[in-house]
Image 1 (spheres, rainbow, N blue to C red):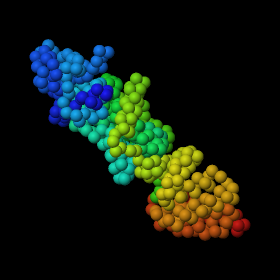
Image 2 (cartoon, rainbow, N blue to C red):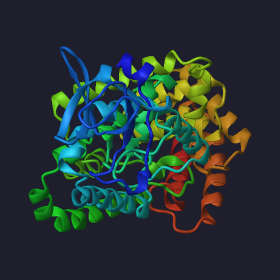
Image 3 (tube, rainbow, N blue to C red):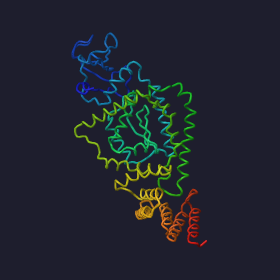
Image 4 (tube, rainbow, N blue to C red):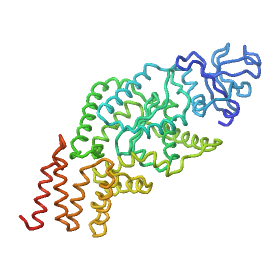
Length: 443
């Protein structure tokens, strides 16, 4: 690889229109090679490492042949890391098999269908601040267009799901769940994941794994079923909001999540990578991070700054874990947010709920009350759910009369809210008022 760093240079000839017959790279003959004289420009179609030294694939008067690297100098010095990877691993394959545009179109359409269904049903996570940061990381990893036979660039699609999951489509799209991002603790760790997936894309692993016959047989029926599942997930969001405005509506039930990001999707997109492909991608991803770390003037973001960038997914994942009764895991993500010193009303609300759920001592109940009062004082979002939580905590503390006053306030607040699902509506408030009266022996 080092030889390519020091001698190899890339010229992309009209990337949007290249075909298997058009050269991607150019070099200069250092010695006579068949009809080429020293100093002649020739086209490079591939690269191969051999025990006797590196060789380059050229087209001579005698057909395609590999020529010793000491006879050719590649032109220009702007070849990026992933262009080198492509030249070493894919150029010769494309020379022999062409761009296989029909199969690549099948994979592109799979991505468009997947993304459309997820977007249509509100399962794509949108956060302009985080999305802008991820675009910066993508550009850092692969600033040039992908070599795919038609214009394509690396991009990321974030999906609302607490299950750590990520995979790729051939068109350069990396799908990553909010849970996967939340699981990372540093920029270096996230870059490692993205670089590994970039390797799969550059090496055309999706295309290699595509079983077109199986894909054609199941495509229409699968996408119809997938649309139904995506719609069910979206409905589940709406049904669990309990009349509040916070991220409870972002929860994805475990079974639906595993279907939405399913083995069928991976098989369809060719992302069910084998152990050899995973090993190759892991190696290249780690090597890229090493190369990146060695660049002059480059440094990874401090961990605290990185966690501020991803704080929205930390909060989202904490709520998702809470609604799946994974309370300790939810508290883990909340503790990360509070450690940053950037918690808002929503975060204080969740931490109060977790504190009440995970313990029942005078100390923990007082801490829960402190947290919920802090949430109400912030008034960032005016969540009525905070009032319901405060009432429950006051009952725990034996302050039933105060709790009743809070539930009266809660009932008044929710009475003006349209389309409140059963659970924490006015009827629930009435029941809590009755419970308070019973505890005070008034009933």
